[in-house]
Length: 186
Image (cartoon, rainbow, N blue to C red; front, top):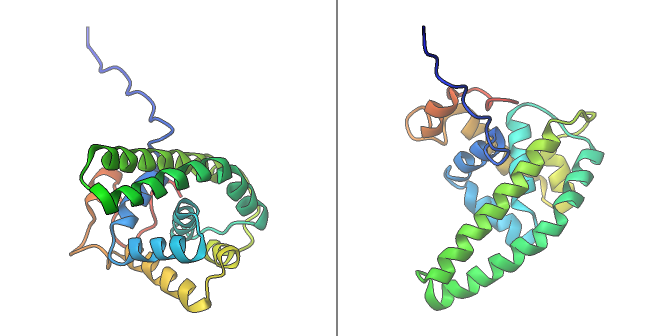
């Protein structure tokens, strides 16, 4: 009798291609600075910006309706995340290495992971694809054309492997992506 390995358990909804993309893209040069600048100066939701980045990297578009649904759906948790973020930033000025600061940092990341899981689920819905995700985000957050162009450049650099030092990203070994290709599961 031949033994076979049990089937692998399904991925957790929290572990999805949008989450993987977000972690890798955020680590690229200038990306975190750009996203945090949009958050701090324009009130942008970084999770929505990451979703727009992923969608754009996949060569897809969104609709006004899908953007509105996503924005409204994230609003309740966004307030919680902002509260934890504000506490973490206050603690950073007082005791950056303390246990409470680290707890806030981990909690904020877990809540953002849940936001991205909700966006990933929405990503699977059938929506008309009528507008550039970067244009939709730019319209909502008042991003100038030059800021949208900078953002598009960061996405292009990531997609072509320029933003990754010397070739494939560490995530490529896990996801099977190669530089110059769209993320998996677009």
